[in-house]
Length: 446
Image 1 (cartoon, rainbow, N blue to C red):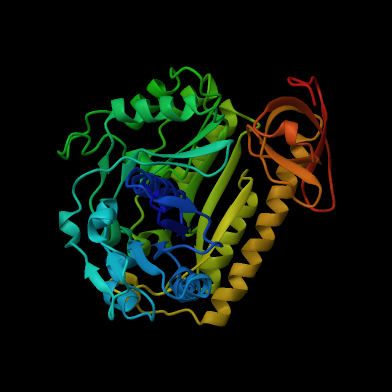
Image 2 (image 1 turned 135 degrees about the vertical axis):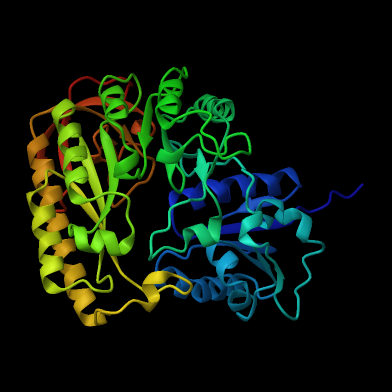
């Protein structure tokens, strides 16, 4: 009997770690249905693009990615899922070559919406009202052999004036604690050394855990439970709101078996006036308190910061206040976002629009500050002993890795180092801004 040839499916993910975790879960559902997963650069029968709506760039890139898929196979079935697919399904369905657009809840049942992969004359839309996105689907992503993104929470109940995420992902809801622990154990059993916790608002973990609005568990409960899972070498907290990062959590991480001294804490502005316009749930004094607390109990901790420039009403004085606030703060690097207007947000109709050339100038200034901050943090770590986890890619003859406190290190390429942990002494920063090191001891033969 002639063996049936498997249909090939490829995936492309735009946006955040949460999107990557969900893409991986959706991809596994295709494999269970008998598909063969291939790289997006290869010819496939179907291409799935997981979209993002956070930045203007992510929207624009969608059309380019569709064209890339069509170059590989003009007859391929193309599906769009994710945040932008929920917010603007008609726009994506109108893009030439797109056959299927699925919203926030439908994306997890994508294999139910495809038949023989015959292309449609027009993009077919299946998109729920966002109030219907009230159930939780657990996910985790294994991007390489060293690190996995584990989704613990979805949605957001905050009403920040610039943000479309609640419109794209719905209310705040959480995975059950037991399911998170099961997924963590499953990841660990695959030989992966590091797990990054991800979600839309992970500090709100526990809300909606069993389909209600109560907090059955807290984020601290989650952290404590994960720290006991056997076989996990490293746990890393991704972005967490400053008002939800409690002293008890910081103290626990400081003495934890597995959690590493690395925090990414959104600030968005160093001006209290702008924070109020953004409807953030803290002011700068609380942010200073969080940074000081971390540095008090973990002096070598790495602290990353999100900041938005060019928000409506941001004057030169407001911006300079942000610049000086960040310059004086003991942080390690910045993720800088240039404000862009998003439909159906309060900020889109606010007065005091900042010209785009001014937004771009301010963005460049903060990116320059980020380079300076990262360099200063790396310099503070020279001469210290750390543990590095090495990744599996050969980049121009070098292998790279990260220490527990997120210092990027490099060594001459040696495949035997991939997915291994080594005690090292940081020695110098090279011309690329990456740190070189000496081995303290070799844990595997290389």
